[in-house]
Image 1 (tube, helix red, strand yellow):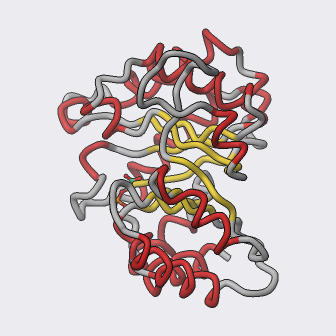
Image 2: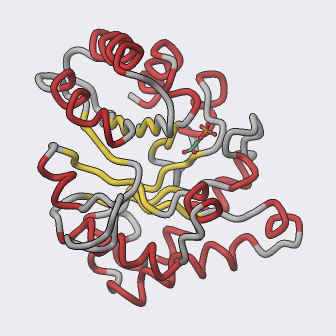
Length: 241
Ligand code: PGA
């Protein structure tokens, strides 16, 4: 379960939210939980999460390792702050920051160079979906990374299917729609098919999580809105457990 806080929160709210989540997630669990706060709060979140089983992640990363890249954050900086995962290729960055498939491929490699695990997001627009081109889009987004890094490195990666039309809209893909794409993505991984975790993201809430997690090719969820509410987030994590 990956909570993507996006550009939300402040020190006081984060402290409250993290304290509630940590208190509600004591002991042993089979589900792995990751929280991805905005960059300025990583250090604070790391200190609150230390001693818990909840892991830390970041929401994006530079494709470069160091140098004159004002405003950018490198994989090694994230590793320094104990991040274990980095979300890359989120549709909000592909759309609002014009990140290309190639740039995402370079970010994927940068995350792995820093010893971290990329959570590679792919997903089609509403137009792609309506025109029946959703698998073509997913295939293009995945192929760009495969072409740059090869497939073997996906052993140390997580994939996330996030239909753009379902993110933050309250519309979730139907179980059939989600399962079709997850099965397709798994097939693209060939011999690694059974080893790579594939998350679903897009308006996952406590009331629809169980139905999605019951599907054979869905291994977890990437949660936006639901990760900002401790009770909702914990309910989904428990459903996954
Ligand atoms: P949402 O966001 O759960 O608010 O739809 C998911 C995401 O952007 O990862």
